[in-house]
Image 1 (cartoon, rainbow, N blue to C red):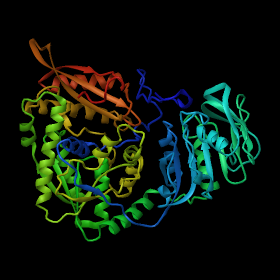
Image 2: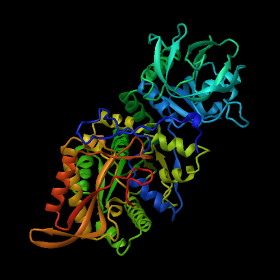
Image 3: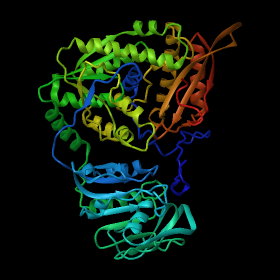
Length: 573
């Protein structure tokens, strides 16, 4: 369990109150984890049965100016990186004990030490490597990172007489480039139990609060420390403070933009691939779509995309994928219609894990068959995102091995010795969408809600049949139609229908019915790790329910799932 020393708030994002008033925060779909899980889920399942044949292929290229964020276990380290990226400065998160070699591929402009749950004076508390202070670049310590600066550079840190959790107000004490032209008093978010009792030699206090005489500090060598968290929304001027650090103090140019990324990545892909061929498994999701678009922009017909219609997708989805990538974007696309194979393999199966396993194995068999007919292929394009890389490289993350298998194509047969082309490897989800926009991908691809790898198979409780699939498609079509029609789609993480294995009595006309129960699931989330059930307007729910029971003959009752995650999961299976 994480210590309360770094316990920052989890923010909810309701869609609408019962009054119908909309939440002004429409950015609920910014995410820290990949939502394009179709293909990677198949491969993860199949990896339990087969060994991997993929290897990492790192592209070459010039050094990129960047900030390194040292992670000391803060639950918001990703937010620090995101805020820096929003300032159009590239950054990477590295482990707290990273060697100098970990950043040698970068033109390092500055270092940030993140918050964390420890006390710097505890035995075994993580410290900053010595080279950080000799790197010749500015350093900013945040919360634990500030205490670390003080502790390692000769100051004194001790347990505070009064802990500070939540809103506070800092007061500037003198001029500093870190705060620039910001107000003398600023609301901030604090989350700490320790405080600095004595400044390190050469440092001065640059801000204070009622409970902390040293709420921020600096020296003349470009080292800064702040006790509050600038990365969270509760510190209104936090983004500007971080921008002041990376632009004004570190001297970063601020050129990390979607056009810059696209042009630079195209060059890197060409350098990595040369004249060789690449295959890419399309899922219809944003990550694989942007991956394919980038690779195609770089090498043209050297890329072949494979899309498997497993018969478990929603109405018109296979046709939309084919239209976008083959007709509009001009990509070489192998379209495999394999619905009968998947449904046959699922006959009689009711256990959700067994469903996943069989779908994964069938996908790999089809992928292998199609790839084998292409002849000489050397690379596999894959939509790995930066949060996946962070998790897979974290020595402290107990799930790291599973995550790495999930995203490094663990299910490929041994004889397929492919190198990976991962053009999105250092992007967050919102940056992926911006890159896709720059590449000209249509909004229906870029703004697509996450869809599970096993598709509708895990939204049908019990055995999969063609009749149940058709019923659920009809229900889901109505849900999507009304959600989009009421302008709610882009404000939801996911919204969908579930066909339960429950049947109930109903009356339609003068006839007794005994039909399926359909459940509506709609959630808001920032990262899919936690989610809250969406407060959909009553009128929207009423219309969805009325349409389903009137238009879908096999359903006579509609219910709403109001379970958050945790304790529930977003999907039912």
